[in-house]
Amino acid sequence: MTKVLFAAAEAAPFYKTGGLGDVSLALPKALTAAGATVRIVLPYYEQLFPEQYRDQVADVTHFWVQVGDHAQYCGIKTLTLAGLQYYLIDNQDYFGREGLYGYWDDGERFAFFQMAICEMMERVAFIPDVLHLNDWHTAFIPVLLAEKYYWIEAYRAIKTVLTIHNLQFQGIYNPIVLDSLFRIGTQTFTDDGIAFYDQVNFLKGGINFANAVTTVSPSYAQEIQTVAFGERLDGVLRANQGKLQGILNGIDTTLYDPETDPALPANFSVKALAGRATDKAALQKQVGLPVADVPVFAVVSRLTKQKGMDVLLDSLNDFLMTQKAQLIVLGTGEPALEQAFKTYQAAYPKQVAAQIKFDVNLAQLIYAGSDCFVMPSAFEPCGLSQMMAMRYGSLPLVHLVGGLKDTVTPYNRFTGAGTGFGFDDFQPAVLRKMMTQVCQVYHDTPKAWRQLQQQAMRQDFGWTTSAGTYLQLYQDIMS
Picture: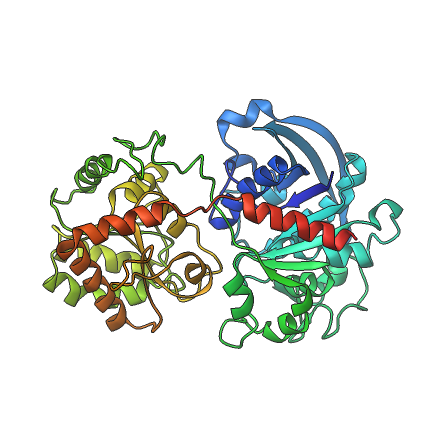
């Protein structure tokens, strides 16, 4: 039985800022169901840790981690939830804050976290066959195993897998961190090691030193080897393409199930869609839009340019003036984009609802009550929202990149095939044209619309297949 230690900076249901949090729950759960022994290690963000789980947390041990010249306290806590055992690394100087990321000392915080993971394994008597690492916050561990902890005999057989969830975030710091944080030499500070334009790049170190590197969709694995999507690491990724693989993320199909979802006023299924009309009316009422039989477009997203929100905004004015349609936006992000959606709501109060907040229950209702889910991302490593939307019968309209390309089949009006709508040319005029086409299909061919909904809802986006692919990857690198 393969033993896996899954290391990440966040995981649902404790803390989540995006897809990484979802994956850090769902993939270990699926790996366990497939027969692996999986434990998860996270920081203990005490201020953010949900109250309902606090009484289940127990102390395991504590020790001191040398961070440069300073010995830093490291407590190890644990809890078991839904069959998964978690280790929580406790140091409130580093993790007792109001947010997960975005602090001036993030480099030191996650340097400590990574060294703490390495020094924890022997102390808790869990030496994994595979250390599965996620994004830059844990990507330096393969370097540490080779350069700092090589003397620990029990660690020599450990294999490492690094999953890149978003190549934009890399952990780039002054080379002084090699001594001031890690206390290792400069022998790895080379072009084929961790050096990156005279800086240290945590993610690059992981790519070069890990036994295998994965991305969260096959298309993204190919795209990031190009200059356009490679974030200045395309050459490094091409050099490592032999160990690079794209494995599509999934969603928790028991959690996201329109037949049982308690957040919905009316449950429904692919064979009995009547409840969707009730949910649509409830959604319109809740966000203050008229209850009307018009296509409801929806966005649940970080409001950033990476998510294509600027392109959506630039497409809206002409669209809203000429089409009978509504738009609901839920999310927070760049202040200028937030304000722009509020401005549209003020100008078109019967057509636009800008919900500038984070609301899990409203998100579920949007999946169930909207007609078209808009994801015009500039790039998208995988994306989970389009899968959730399809599960609930909301047809995605996507820019055909990365995981969006891998999961959404554009509508073919001649054959009726498809699970949504897609476009290649990343321009406001093209998006506006596609939104207009969505309205035409909705109004003019309701039978085709219903068929598309049912085709989308029948897609299997569960984790079973992907978990099996990961298990095979583990076996390959172990042998």
